[in-house]
Figure (cartoon, helix red, strand yellow):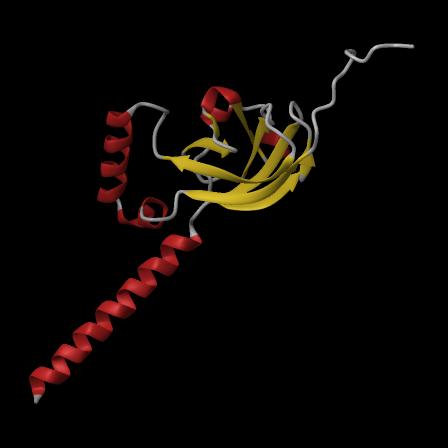
Length: 166
C-alpha cells in the first residue's frame, strides 16, 4: 500500500517540478513589447521593442534570414542608446531594428531568434551554454524558448524616381 502512495507522490512531484520549470523558462523567453511601424514597404526600417533578448538575434521573414550584420540593437534606456549593440548588457531591454527585405506585398509572420552565440560560431555557443548551466540562477534564460514572433504587413514596393514623367 505504501508503495502505490509513494509512486503517486513521485509522479505528482515530477509533474509539479516540470510545470514550474516550464513556467520559469517561458517567463524568460524573448518578449515583444511593440512593433513600430506594424506595416511598411521593402526598405523601411522596422523597430521592435523587446524584453529578455539576451543573445545574438536573427530575424526570419518570408524565407529570408537577417543575421547580426544586418540588424541593429539599441538600448531602450536613452542614457545608453549610444552604446554599440554588441556591448549591451545581456538582460537589459532593447530595440531591435531591421530593414524590410525586398519581398512581395502581403502579411507575414516575423520570427526573431535569440541565438546563444555569434552566427556560425558553434564552439562559442557550446561553451557559453555550458557556463550558464553551471550557474543555476541563469537557468531560466538557458532552458527557454529562444524565439518570438509577430505579424507584419508588407506593402507594395514604392519605386522612387523611376516613374516616367509626362
